[in-house]
Length: 349
Image 1 (cartoon, rainbow, N blue to C red):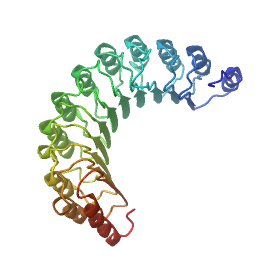
Image 2 (image 1 turned 90 degrees about the horizontal axis):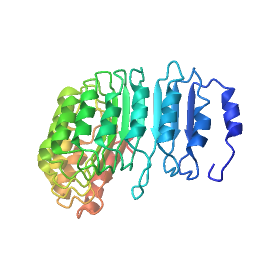
Image 3 (image 1 turned 30 degrees about the vertical axis):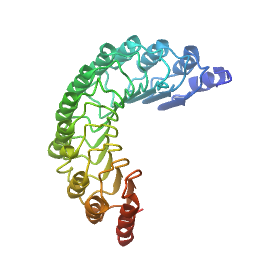
């Protein structure tokens, strides 16, 4: 494709099929154009249920492809899932604008879509106006939503608050990447998002790396809401790395009682001490099977104060465990403590 491969044979073959799922990746094909993608989109049939197109790092793609994608969405009678990636290199300007988002919004509005996965990582031209129009179009039937708006300096907390207002009880899985969106994810916006999380949520993946306004109170609110109001939660991934305001005041007091997978990252949150590690250890439910903790660069942690209690608290149900404590002064001793505990626990990798 990068060399200009003729799309016509693929188009002709797809036209003869009535596929339930169409998944095409043009990742990093810099010479792919709107017309090339349209050749594929024109083959969408009425029986299609899932439409996945990856156009990450495709530098020649414009808003026209978003419009064509939206038009293709109207062909199937029962489209259940869309996945669209326009991931752009952070140092480059994206050709996508709010007009492209609005074209997608028109196709989503009033649909009975169940899963929407959208990757606009690095698309720095997008603003609150287009993003809010997109969120407003999200159907109430959605059970899974994944949105990546990382490295966008032009969206504000208005977009996050708008998104929070669109979450419904049907939502069971949410992935939201706001890495380096400091203007969008203020402390207050995180609180609003936390309080809006639906009770039937089973999976939450939230990336707030380098969101400098996030403080102890905001993160504590999130932990409290998750513990109190999402009893069905089975998987929690939370990346707070480089949120420099965070300290021990953000520590969780509990997790959902049936949690099975927990992934917490506090890389270079240098105010964190043994208290945070102990709080996590005390809050761990016995149902956790997969555990990942990242305290890299948290220089105030001590082997005796942080990792002895953590080692003792590892659940008997645990099957996979990873601990990142690079650039922590007591790392060598802490690793010995954890390894000794793992040797005592059969089945942990």
